[in-house]
Image (cartoon, rainbow, N blue to C red):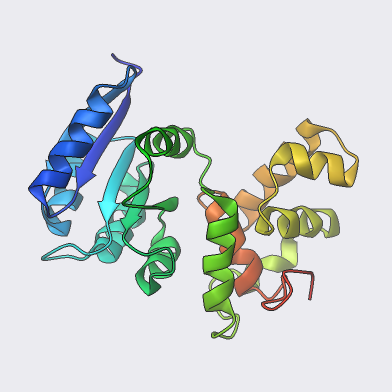
Length: 227
């Protein structure tokens, strides 16, 4: 099981933690390395167990899920740990804050078990944009009510014209294959552009690229097009 996906479950409800553990450990190639009932404990266990993915409830005692995520993603010790947020509502204000804090994506708590397992696989593989239509809708919703101010604006100077085109398509939820088809370039070329964007914008994954597109003002908050 050395190559198994290592998961840390963080939720203040024991019943849910137990249900997640059973579901995850029944799936070949997965192992639960710990359970946390508070945000503070989640941060501690992330350091101790070095999981690939943390399933993090948004609302946690002691430290909420957002602050716990910020500490996990912002610490050199746990910088490679991916956080998958869990929430009851798909337009929860806290979710947007969590994505900005470094979370790789989010899921609703009533997500079908097979989708949850697929999401963990996606996040563990480093591909952060889950349910693109929902994620884009959430980000666009809050972008409409906030001026595009964030850490990404000043980094756009180094992004080339072609990379901006790719970034806009990423923000619209297109996959690499769909972007390649739209721009009539090879899949390898798109992957290279995405890799360069991640580096230039200091973004952890595709989720943060979407946020960068909105917060920099590159993508119109109203239409989802280039502004």
